[in-house]
Image (cartoon, rainbow, N blue to C red; front, top):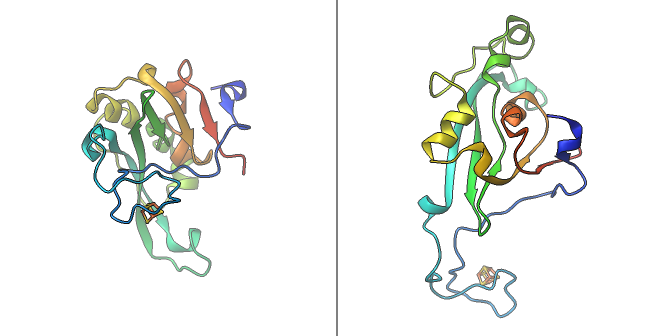
Length: 168
Ligand code: SF4
């Protein structure tokens, strides 16, 4: 993917996805325009969101927390597929299986245990396919940052939708 295909200026600082507008309190100034009951056209959580297993890596605590010690943690790298009014939106693209299998990358980044993947093929393509979605169906995507465990599937969006990326 070329830099021109990534949208840095339009990248949001935070993304929220609300599962319902129903809230018993229904405060007058609610920015979410809450209702006391579910909206009749509201999607179920199963219809509106899929948590995608895009691989798991092993990282020592000290790489995540200062003075965290040598204990190795199992760290899933999920993506989220969100159904919006305009279509499917993807948050994060997980690990790149080919990169995670290269000896030089294993030595440098994955030395604490080989990455695991849910299936035999490409994790993002398999996860999208299981939801009945192809990369070309996406209306947009966002990547939290450009580390290897979040950007591994970006190459599948080369001819796809705009991709928002955090600048720092
Ligand atoms: S602000 Fe909205 S969501 Fe929050 S408690 Fe009030 S009605 Fe509920």
